[in-house]
Image 1 (tube, rainbow, N blue to C red):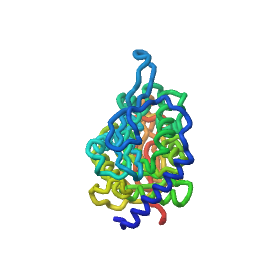
Image 2: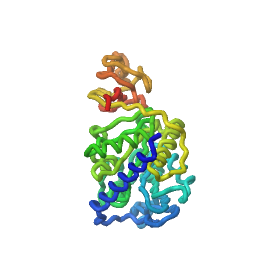
Image 3: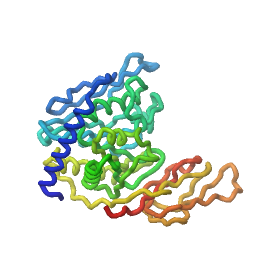
Image 4: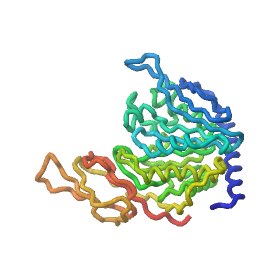
Length: 362
């Protein structure tokens, strides 16, 4: 546990960062989204963002994206997001539970909770929106004149991030992969932002944490990328996958969010389980292993296994050429396997697994 003085310094830094940012990012662009709640009002409000969408069966209707606001006086504002991708369930359930259990008098500051941000995708059980095929976490900063997914991203970028002093964005592997629960933070634009991001990860205390430069994962177009542009401390978590609800990932999400809210002073009454120190790791060249051909992948590794460069990762079988010898796939780097492809059938370019190595001393 950190000292009280350090917690107070953190809250001061969050408040200062928020004040400066709010001046720099004045809201000037109109959004077609209408909200049923007043984000400036104290108390609990359970409402919706009305995303107007003209469809085949409803030309003048809207899609109600749930939003919960819990506010009590002055203090930091935390923006908590699940369902950025619709088939990643740990964060959705963790934030719905949190929203039901926390009362306004328990907090100091403001919680803005969107457990199903990409509601059309959540209801369809898909990564991307069935309305326009948009991958929300590749659409930031969005466009008020774009399709539904671009409009959601624009609302978050222009209406919610300027209010936020920190963001937690909860993910999982969806249909394509499964992860050891881990937390990812961005490098930031300076030492202060980098230190704050690392502190969020240490408080969240996932089994593994690492710093990302955004390359190969959507970069500027992701929510974390937009947070970096706006200097909002952001933590992204990967909590499971396979389109299931991983109990371990759900617990990591629930406990981690509570610890962050406790340490930042937003939820001083929280009493989450004591954290085991996160294991800091890093990506290196060759961390991602991709399929070079289409086929059926037979893995020869398990999540959490330590592998070495040159070790066999698996075999690629070819259903259209049954007598062809399976292709052997080898690791080009050493490290811990943190994610693995789920469907056995893969196409050229699909990520088969990813590894992280021990981080250099900080």
